[in-house]
Amino acid sequence: MSRIPSLALAVASAFALVAGTAVAASAAPEPPSVAAVAEARVDPVAWTPCNPDPSKPDPGIYDCAVYPVPLDYADPSGEKIGIAMMRRRAGDPAKRIGSLFMNPGGPGGSGYLWATTTRFSPDVQSRFDLIGFDPRGVARSNPLKCFTTDEEASSVFDRQVAVPVTKAEVDATLAATEDYTDACDRNAGPLIEFMSTENVVRDLDRMRRAVGDKQLNYAGFSYGTLIGATYASMYPDKVRALIIDGNVDPDLRLHNGLEYDRRRAAGFELALDQFLKRCSAAGAPRCAFGAGDTRAKFDAIRDHLRTSPVTLADGTAVTLSSFTSQVANALYAQTRQAPLAKSLQAVDDVIRQQGAPSLAPAGTEDAKALAVTVPTALREALPETPYSADDSYYGVNCQDKPYPSNPRVFANLARSWEKDAPTFGRYQAFDAPACATWPVPARDAERYTGPWNRRTASPVMVIGNLYDPATQYKFAQNMQRELGNAVLVSVDVVEHCAVGRSKALDKLVTDYLVNKAVPAPGQLLQPDLEAFPPVA
Image (cartoon, rainbow, N blue to C red):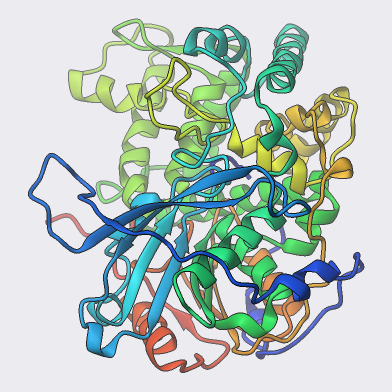
């Protein structure tokens, strides 16, 4: 997920969970049209050989296509949009099981090149066609665009502050956000009405039929877990194998956007606290920030930045917005956490020098890593038009997640949330004000809100990291409980998503996909690598 994005961590209770525990969701019944069109004939995908990286020799194992789907499923013979797909052909056609569709999350994440992923074992690559795709409105698939040029976009986004603190910053950010949604209303076109996850899932089922698979094999990460859970609920008898890793809480997300976001902020705080504890346990030099009280040092940096930026020797400024976004970004992956520790120590050194920075060049570079604000939303459209991004992140979120229509609510909540989530509460509160004035908000959109407990033809494999920052572990527990037929496997790591990061987990994933072997519930696995390995 692109933003904290976005509380309590009940690890012990997870190990008592068993597959198939169901919680009913209070929501509208399944649309009758789902069953009616479930196996209607569709045109097959017209694959064409392609090279994922034209700068390198063609490996000769990939195909590409743009598959037409209805813009509006209430009018299936009407206007069409194209879904960009890439396929890595199964390595052993004689033993091919089917296709494995994949989505990396976001929303707004491009999945097209995921056909080239190495997260899955050679056995999986041998037995399945790996299919990556860009969901509707994303990147190569009719990207949803709110601006006509990058200059127009910059004139709006440059006025937004990721973590606004002062009244002037808050007012400017909210005003710019309303200008943003006004631009979406003017420029996005009819696609903006049909961006909900329900529509993405209808597209996915259409693609499943178009490649000739009787049942779906799917791996979804982060927001991609909502796609998986929605598919399992709309088409339960069409599930062969479904892996969801880095899970959202579908019932909460579709019914209360604000509470969902508050809990995401709390999840980031839990991950940060664990990062600091593990850094302290490793100590310096394994963790560059490990000398002294890591918690107190971190809080001192954050509190200093609330009132003034930290200016480095070359004039670069670390702000509260850049700092918070970079810390959040680093918590997503263990490989980013040792570099984060170096950056934190470098900024701490500058502050302790009382305004007379004299860092060595290496220290300056470490500190500068915290001076660049990470974008608040995935904008992965190809740079082939005057506006080189897309706006699918809000296109999906604002149709899926219900929010108040008054943007000032978010500013008021920021003060409350940061009491319990001092690093990420305000940051998360200002992620979604665009949804208050979005042209087609959740209350006006066709969206699937449950029930989530329909029993699938095969059990769903739910994967949760104990200290996942963007989708906290409690969400994975809730996902397992809400689904009608699911098992939870846990990994002890500070990271977002786990497939490809633990050999023990990957063995379970392979056995599940290839042999339909359901993992035993209650397993707690370890990652392959440490965030702070011993110094040689």
